[in-house]
Image 1 (cartoon, rainbow, N blue to C red):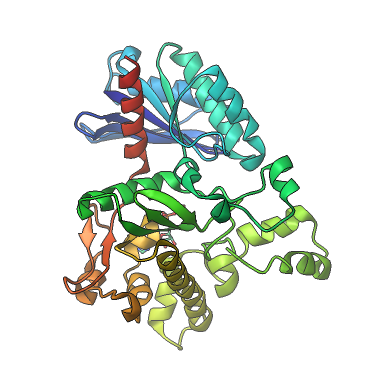
Image 2 (image 1 turned 90 degrees about the horizontal axis):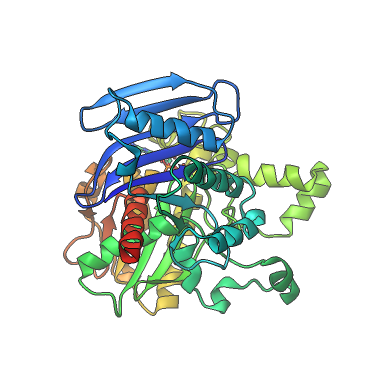
Length: 408
Ligand code: ADP
């Protein structure tokens, strides 16, 4: 089935056209600066290896969708001869609240529920809705499927998703843990389950470590706990987000620095994490290069500290989740840092004899920019450690094809 996967962000729209039978990507691209002056589309046709860029006004995501379809049908850069060849559209949706525990075929009811999720993801939800409406306008008869980043985490028990706050906050405003990156956690956990050869009785910790990072405990193929919370600010240290902190720090710093709630939120989301601790970069590559330079580099100490904070947090989560699941069969590393930062993987897995974790350090050190799954643990290791490149778009395409086929 030809499935167009759409990922509409606040001012961007990424897309990939899949043939789900062969799981190949025919074309992909990105519309940037939507609603901002100088918007442009970058389109790649992968069959012939062609690339084109065009600066064109896109006032909203609906206009961006029109331009995407135009490129897909283009005589030179396209790969389709008619719009009918797009058999389904799959949308990545950042937040589905507690409404959606699985991917859904678009309907009025589904769209109405998605609108109710606005407050949980105020930047993304309107963009998703515009993307969906854009598709409805351009291809009204093509089925659309929504794949939610929160859905995989909906299996958590109340004791895992509830905060110890007055219960009314949950009842009135839905204040609870929702988690994020669910599509990525589901994809890599699914691949790991195939390797383990079973689902029942399995205990996996999936570490999605990128610019945004989250860790999940997956027992019997279902999430029992995850590190992100009510918002993606929670959990481990990230590129610019602080992760978990003592909540009393928030009113303390607001008072000391005279910050408004929006300014405090900005400080924790945009100025913290690697950037805040190191004082010079949010990119793990920059931190690693300062660490490699050693103390001669003026950024060495704080870069090292920033990485070591994340290392310790990951170790603690692996330990906590192993306790929660009464054991551990596998750890998976994925996303920009998980797939490429060889040293972080090594120091996280170091001194973990208590769990019987042992990785092949020489092999691990060579494994970056992999497109394949790699086993990093030694044969003697009691816990399997794997690098599994994430592919959220492929999972969205698979879900979309499965749901649309089932309705035929
Ligand atoms: P996002 O969460 O925005 O999708 P990514 O998953 O791409 O982010 O992760 C970005 C992080 O991954 C950055 O800190 C970057 O340093 C790191 N990263 C990406 N590619 C590499 C690489 N080839 N080598 C080392 N680190 C990398």
